[in-house]
Image (cartoon, rainbow, N blue to C red; front, side, top):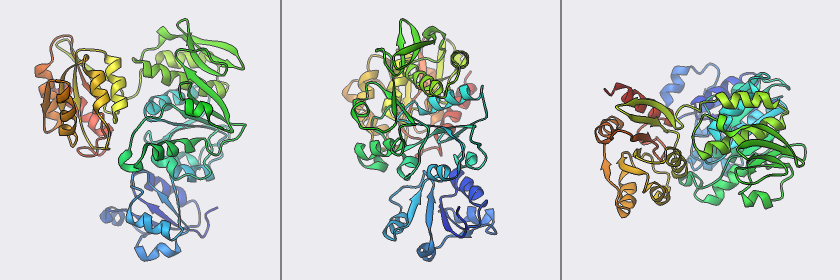
Length: 438
């Protein structure tokens, strides 16, 4: 397929290394670019050449890691030279044999939904849970068989560089505003997300919220299945009389009672409805779906209970990397919150989450690049505000000012990149510091 191609792997983190491993199955000429030249040299150049700019004219296509900014000068030059830039999702689609691919995207909820769908499918067959959730999709590309399940958490960064990518089931949890530092406009961001169903046909499915009028009215070739917490649907999953149902052509099937769900928050109910749709469309038995959902405790770093100390509960929501995600966490906890927020600035607007939290948040502890920006908005609402320099000081301060019955919640409303390499490392640091408290 790629024999004799000159391929540039752009970025040598998780995606880049998976791409190298994958491309080594073909007789291709591989070049690798990374800002960290020492890492490339340590890795050894016997299976690839370290890229130099003068090589660009002979490159057939580029596999871009999702963490590389699209405005990188070398990528701009590549576009000028008409070099095709592909994401790992596109390469996955070109290679993988699986006919049971579920791709999940959205501003919020995609990690929980991806984890839940994968957990259900693991009960019935070989399942690969990959993508933005941790493992590269290319780890599954060569090994997944036709009957295996592949569940992909798909970011806007990955989808932006796709051309033919076509999942059997596309799930859009929600689309609000995020990554404007990257996509520049909400429209660009939304268009990247919507590439998830662009190449689907009438044999495929798209799952989305019934409140998403844009998708409801949009001409889409794939079959539309919606989810709703407040209306009965002809095709999709919904809540009625305290129970979850799945409906196909108005024939409804009871799945389970809502009160069996253990993970908190209305947003998680929507994530569960997404998962029900995806799994029923793959013809998974309702009893298996019910069993897995009723035992599902959520994912790490998403409203994750850490510990209770002196009748104060500590929750890790480091996955709350935008204001909408933090709003969901605040609503799930409800009141008496000591909120730790702040981080890398993605040009987000923090006004709405502060308004929602006004009657729920007792104290606001801010850190990171956006601390002063959030403080400026919070002062307008007369918040009790503290600014600290690092997570250790934030946790220690929270333990001093929290009273019995309060909840300390880390939900930054920001990415981690100003202080941590990832939200996972940020969340683990928070948990370690909480566990050190006496």
